[in-house]
Length: 352
Image (cartoon, rainbow, N blue to C red; front, side):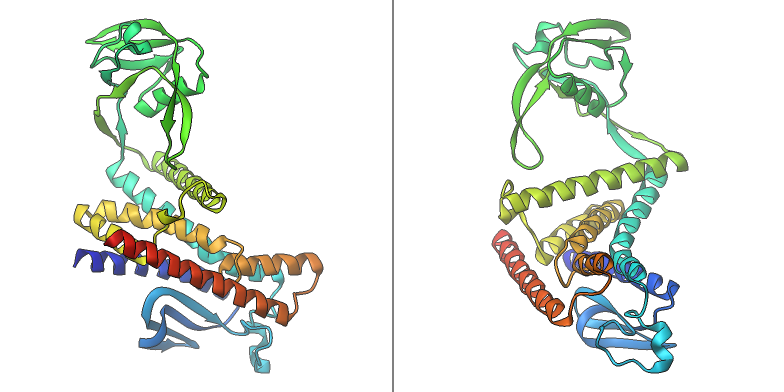
């Protein structure tokens, strides 16, 4: 039950905000909106307000906003010319198309801001746990429960800050300031290079001193300004990580069986529902960023494909011919269907 509920909530929120971006931007530029649909296929419920029909459709794997004059060859009543999408300047059309993915990023930013404003952020303290035998840390006399307070005179407050400063040093000897039961002292330590596995399962060399974290965490409260900065930073980090992941998938550096689809999203959403509301919100934000990036890929039928067509139009001074666009759309649709089949296969194999 939690899986179904989580799936409905997550997809419903993501689709709604994505299409809301297209809707608001279209209305702002005076483009008429004929339909605003959550889902595809047969309509389950609908209500018309003004000229727009708001509907819920049977297949909850997407949504769409149908604009007046969306197709270049559509017949438009003379009185609707001012509200036609195709008759707007190319840059306005680009903004309308881009506003859907941009609203996905905006949604993530708003969710992160709400979480960090109310709950703060959880940080791991730079307290040492296990000291590896014959490691630089052991040779320097470090012990369990020691707390790092500075690296080369620069104060640190989190385990991540300490690890980054050590790794970024390139193996050069450094001074580590340590607090041991209230006694502050410095030790000279030379990090060693070790092969480690990164987030993508790749083996990379990192400079370490041979300690593990004690696992002590604290909640850091943030004022609204700090929460906004942290929200922007977190959105940027996840965006960068997602783009790198997509690039590595395309190059084959990451196995394609890591891709997941609706079933995986449903499973993960159900798990977040069981873990609590904050976890579910965080999950929605992360998936929203992923959805925004996916839609910006330059594949026909996706928003990124339309942006590609409009960019070509802006450069050439005229749009591509309708036959060329139709063929590109067919290729894009085929690729998208193949991707959906593949991720469904991955989901099913992973499920069983």
